[in-house]
Length: 410
Image 1 (tube, rainbow, N blue to C red):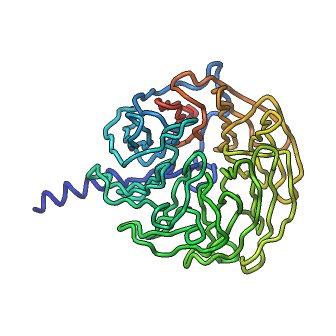
Image 2 (cartoon, rainbow, N blue to C red):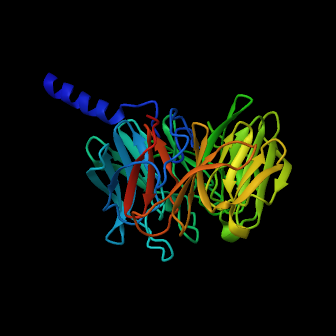
Image 3 (cartoon, rainbow, N blue to C red):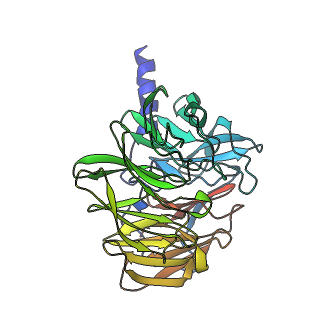
């Protein structure tokens, strides 16, 4: 028995071992597109950095990679109906293929949307149909699932659920929508409801929630189809809502907080702005608005007081804004319609949906300066997945393929 317990303990440690450069969830360790990696290449040779490996057979999907230790996790849809979690080792070999249930067959972009969230020896993912699943990574099997749309009487959106769920202590937080479950928190071990946010009736959009800390108060913030909202992280009580139109109710960018300001954005010409939170976090007041950065679902990053992201309408220019004022600092047509993340002084801008060009750009308000680019030629379908940077590698998901590039400086 003692020997068995030791072996089991080793297995758990293998799953949960954390590295400084891990990325256990969508858009990095902080859910904001800022990765903690250092010592990375500042320029790329012609043709891009060295390719470590290419893994194929991942099915249809737009999940980014999550990386914990020497394991990589992505989702994909096989047989045109079933969602799977794929577990790969550091050499790109698929070690496990775990089914989690029916996936969306939405015609314009069939396949998985959600990036897995890793929490110790468990993984959490939500399907395009609203099926929230908990997977035991040691056993390689599903522990529980809950269709949150059905539980909270909510409707799906046009292109189906695309958020990546948030782990907060013993809770899993997601956004069913509907007047009785704008936001909900479930027990991460059982799937039982802990709290549900009630408010103006609205549908889930395509936005992943995050938690900000404002004057000591922990607030869950996200977007639905017609509103940006903030709720108390402990109770789920709605603190405020801010009405904001978006094309086809698409809000796909997680709000960004800094020094009492919350940046929000909608695409296709609507633009965004900053909301100033009251001292107690129970209300918001518009501070500034901007239409030059109308990011649709590509992500925006905040670096040293400046926002960087790509617009949508008018060519989808890469843009730099000052967070405090909304002032347009620079924009360029040389990089367009890009999913943008940041690490070690540099922006990684992945152009889609058809271009498939990865760009390396200095994160500076001084001027646009690109120091590398290459074409992503492996894989299929649209170039929509957000890049992941972890443990010295850049991971790019393109449909059926996941590609790992070595970006550590020698």
